[in-house]
Amino acid sequence: MLTYNLFMKITVESSQNDFMFLWVVYSIGLLLFSFITIFGSFRVWYSIICFCSNCPNQSLKEKIAIDGPNGL
Picture 1 (cartoon, one colour):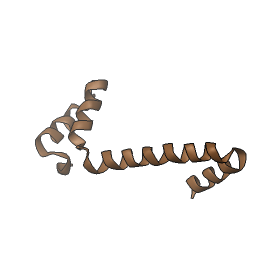
Picture 2 (cartoon, one colour):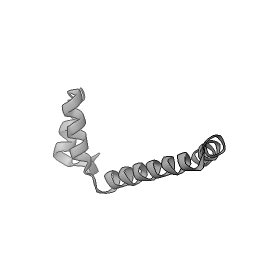
Picture 3 (spheres, one colour):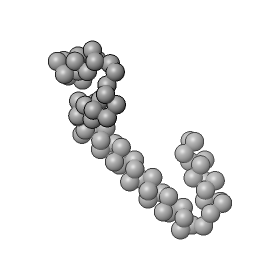
Picture 4 (tube, helix red, strand yellow):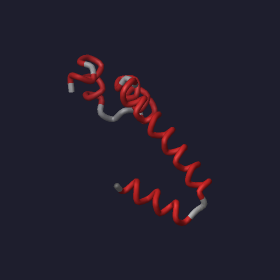
């Protein structure tokens, strides 16, 4: 509902072309997010995040490596 209200406000305040552009960008982002969520491996994303931030929680990392994401 919040998204709907936001886009209705954008439609009123801007032209139809701008609205269509934003809607396309929003749709592509939503598709990418759902694709990553459904098909992406939690382990892969977690290891990337850990690699970038030096993973302070080592025990959680080890637990995921041993049990997999379903072990949580």
